[in-house]
Amino acid sequence: MELTALLKGSLETSYLDNTLLSNEKLLTDLLINDYRRGEKVLTTIQKELLTCKEYKMTVAFITEGGLSILANQMLHCIENDIKGKIITSSYLYFNNPRVFRKLMSYPNLEIRVHENKPLHSKGYIFHHQGYSNLIVGSSNLTQGALTTNNEWNIKLSSLEDGKIYKDSIDEFDYLWKNSTVLTNSWIDEYEEKYNIHQQIKEQIEDLNQFEEKIKPNKMQSEALENLKNFRKQGATKALVISATGTGKTYLAAFDVKAIKPKKCYLLFIENKLRRMQ
Image 1 (cartoon, rainbow, N blue to C red):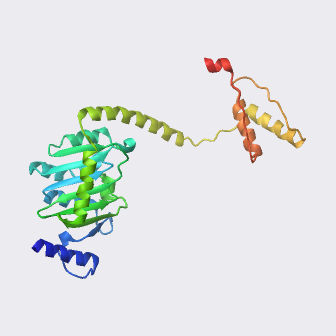
Image 2 (cartoon, rainbow, N blue to C red):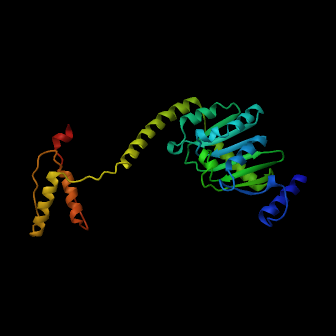
Image 3 (cartoon, one colour):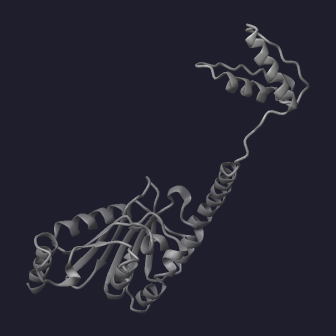
């Protein structure tokens, strides 16, 4: 009964009148990262891990940095046999395989990977004596999300008979049942796909960094000038004859760019023998 009264008092402060005094542990709070006020989402997560009896997390993205800044609290949970369940994802191949292997090294943790559809939720549930604290918002389990990024998260408290608690647990349990148990063999398969994805990603980044504009070579410049003169004279047809590999395909593109037509159709005829080779 005392806990119920304390929670009601905190709800009045949180939602009705911020000047009312109530139990700070049970207040509904906005968790942000603000260096000016010395606020970090990390601080609350750390406190919860040190004081909870059990915890559950569902986060799409986890990084080695995110785990490292919680290392002391995770060790505390191991030493005090505080069990945890984490649901994460393989979405976009963001999570490094090393993160999955690190998670598997924690003896007090059960890990599952949600693969049915993209997982985008960021929710943390910390069970205490008689009540639970929930943190829901934008922060994944990454160093940036917990310390520096512009994030908005709501921390709220609920008794175990509360609707918000029941709905959160039901959703977590549903995701848990529909997720894959993390195993070494799963990580091995994921790592192969992850490495391929990283190679493709690096190639795309290299292409995006290529800032040099393609410019006409000598042959193309002369041909473009001649084509320009032909048009001035009223010609509507022209034939360019040039050796293989001198840039006729690019020439066509340069010519189209020069005249800027409202509508354009380009026909490229490829050497059949070369295509077969």
